[in-house]
Structure formats: C-alpha cells, structure tokens
Image (tube, rainbow, N blue to C red; front, side, top):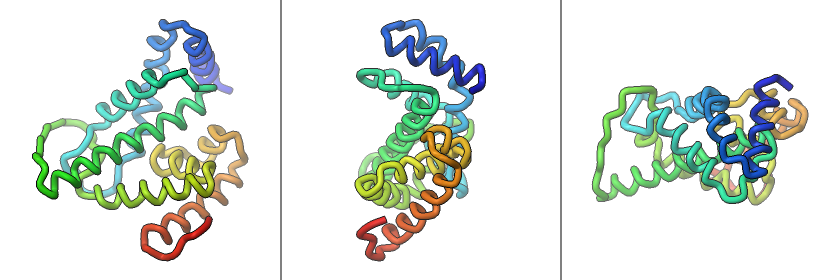
Length: 193
C-alpha cells in the first residue's frame, strides 16, 4: 500500500470516528484521483454543452462528504462510491437535458475547461443506466466492475484492488457485463447474466 493510499484510509477512519478536520485534509489528497475519475466519465464524441470536469468533481465530493454515516472503509471503497456518485450526477444531468429537448426550458452555462459530454448522448446514458440498474439486481459486484471501469476509468488492476478480487476476476466479469449490457440496450432478451 502506498503512503498516500494509507494516509487516505487513515483520514477516512479519523473522519468516520468524528474528526471533522480530517475531511479538510482528505480533499487535496483525493482531488487528483477524483479528477481522473471525472475525466473517465467523458465519452469520445464531439464536445457539447455539458458538465465540466471540475464541476463534476466538486458535485461528487459534496455528495460524498454529505453522506450520512460516513460509510467509507478505505481509499478503494471511497473511490468506488465516488465513481457511483459521478454516474448518478451524469445520469441526472442527462435526464434533465432529455426533458429539456421535449419542451423544458434550456439554461445554458458556458464553461471553459474539459467537458463531460452529456447532451448528445443523453438517451444512450439513460439506457445504459437502466441496464446497469438491472445488472445490479442480478449481480451487484459485476455492476460495480462496470462503474469502476466505464464510469470511473479505472484499470483492471485498480478495479481489482478496489473490489479486493483478482485482475482475472475483473477481466471475466467485465466481459460478461459488457455482453449483458449490449444485449439489454439492444433490446435482446437478457433475463440473466
């Protein structure tokens, strides 16, 4: 375990135990990794109006530190929940954009940094979220593998560390999950994983 990883885990433990100052020290330590997670949320399509990387990081961080009970066991667990929070934020943004296309009022904010394209792929993101929610009911760990790899941008090794399984398990579940999600999104019958 690296010194930084150990420090993040220690700060999470201190914070969980009631040390409110620990959260102020935690943010600078996890900020770079949260930005990497947020950039992993980007889709490879032309940039459109969307949520900026920094805004996504800050929104996710606020959601994480505001969580009741401070459930984070260690750095890996914190980052896994961060990936899930970013997924929820982006899906909410996609739903908002989708409803605006159907007559809602459009509020446009110009942001000058890397963007996480949402508007052009809103419907795809919503379909993917529905498929991932279904997968979560069938196989929760496989769903977390998708969150970490697709939404979080983690490598096989990083996802394995976060979920405390072998890289071979991550590779196998990633293949199965992608096949399930493809069948589900394409409308093919997908009763099980």
